[in-house]
Image (cartoon, rainbow, N blue to C red; front, side, top):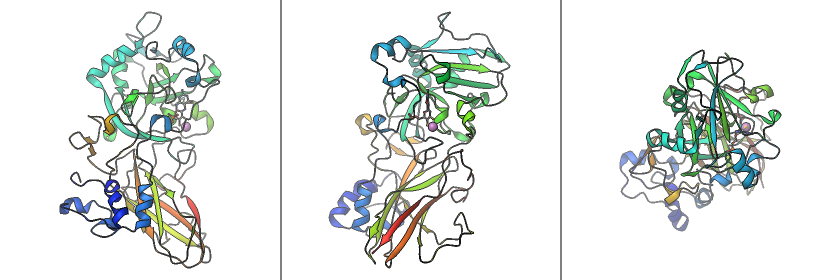
Length: 419
Ligand SMILES: Nc1nc2c(c(=O)[nH]1)N[C@H]1C(S)=C(S)[C@@H](COP(=O)(O)O)O[C@H]1N2
Ligand SMILES: [Mo]
């Protein structure tokens, strides 16, 4: 998997020559190539669509923003940011016992007794404990990811241990700067056990100060935000200012008050990026897309064209018996985008090999991939294109968790007219 150069890079040649020649690739490397490019030609129209794909990583300023606040904390003028601790020089984090259901701590970290954590303190912890990992940031209530990045910080547990917790600690909750207005507070929480230990080989929950190798921007929640690897965006609180160690027995997230399932890890799903809406009869149809790789991993992406003249039985609501066809999951790109310094995945990023800068496995869980396929030409008529992901256990989207308010998993539909 490591010794082939990326498809996305080589297809530049291919658009010129209409052919992709596999050079000295070993048999092992070959097995990882998408089927349609394994020793065969890639149709120019598909090569062109692949060429135009977005990059996998998103530059910090290209993320979609989901921020609450009136005014938005990241829009405050510089002097105000300095005053309220929204700069690296003035940021402070308090870690306290919940006054209502206190955990017992030997050493709470407070501004009052000058023990709050500041940015220098976090960088001190980072010398020994910093971690980086790839993660797609997705809002539980929005159908497409806000962006994908390499998030860097120190594990929250390192800060937890500084407080020397003793007993009655069952939940950790936290919030960020909210214009000192209780009505604007956006709070999230975790069962305490998630903090010291990382189940199922997940990356740790981090107190994050860098994204894609640069300081976390104010809009992305800088100077410091929480990032919970396996969770939807609402757990990753921006402009972090307070962490409470509590003896409450259940979640108290602000998002929970809005009918959301606050315990739902990232789902796997596929969606299209480019589909021609009008095509000529008989002409092949190039389609590209992405898949979010949720907690269940990703084994396949499939597509299906339904003819309006011959609709699928309405009783099969999840289209389980439709004639789905496999699309090709593209290998890791050589160029990741995201405005990375030196265009390189930062050294030590979990799941990546420092020597090659390539991921050790692909697809990478909690991240995203691109896919492509060339659909055969169709007779004139109206069609609906659908794509779906199959996870590593063989569950086809929208299964295994089709419920609303726990993250997007609906099967997308795209109309196509063939003339
Ligand atoms: N303090 C604070 N943190 C927050 C939010 C917020 O409104 N205030 N929005 C949350 C939600 S719902 C999402 S989806 C993510 C979005 O992260 P992004 O704006 O960096 O894309 O931030 C989360 N963190
Ligand atoms: Mo969100």
